[in-house]
Length: 79
Image 1 (cartoon, one colour):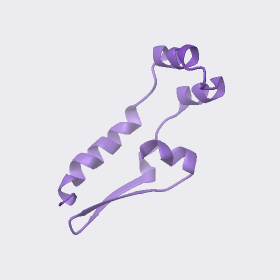
Image 2 (cartoon, rainbow, N blue to C red):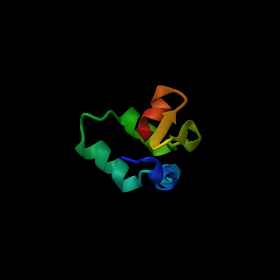
Image 3 (cartoon, rainbow, N blue to C red):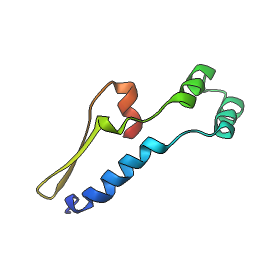
C-alpha cells in the first residue's frame, strides 16, 4: 500500500493539532465525571498546547514516515 501519497493530508492534520484546546466545559466534565483523573492532570490539560515542531513527517519510497522528537510527555499526545 502506497501511504506516501497521504503525506500532504497527514501533515495537514498534524499541523491542525496545534489549535486543539479543551474547552472549560470539557475540563469541568473531566473533573466532575471522571473521578480517576486527578485534578492536577486536568489542570495540566487546560494549559497544554501541542507542539507540532516535535513531529516530522516524510516519505521513503512508498512509505510514510512519522517521527516524534522531544520529551515523552510532550510527544505522546500526537501518537
